[in-house]
Length: 222
Image 1 (spheres, rainbow, N blue to C red):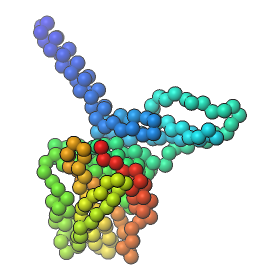
Image 2: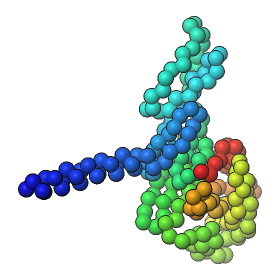
Image 3: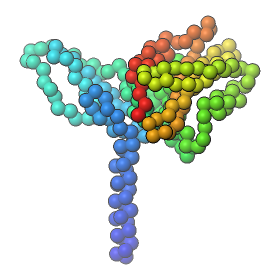
Image 4: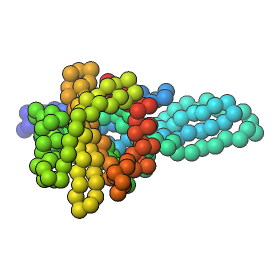
């Protein structure tokens, strides 16, 4: 009986250790903060406090010492327009209004950030899969007669990425997917997918233009 109780205590202790470790799976620095979240956790909101002395940033539910502002001075507090994606050794800012979804499975870890017309997907294959394999599966899904592809090159901040652009036409609606490969500093491969609903004139949405501009400024591979 004593051995059984000891085993239960050890098991619970290991669960606590594992739980604490999981809470620190994604770690990044933002301004003067270190953001720690689990792999399936949505990035927190960021708040801005603006005074004549400058701007201070505060992370949702994260303590920080208040630098103070001069007496009788006006201050403005607002929610920062962007969130910081912190997962999979990749970071970039994206609109805070986007929805967040994490689908973690035995074959893929997929993070999806969705706006109205524009969607961002970060895919970490746990089995071998490259850009061409992913695009070929999409072509098979949509039908070869509805798809055209071409090779692309994009520069996001200091990162130069190669990939494939897939243009899909279904029932008069155009969908553009830019699929690129990312290799982090540890040699792990991931896919970065930008999906945009195009206009009737095959023009990119305004949402994609503003979001891509921000990503191009803030994108980083760790």
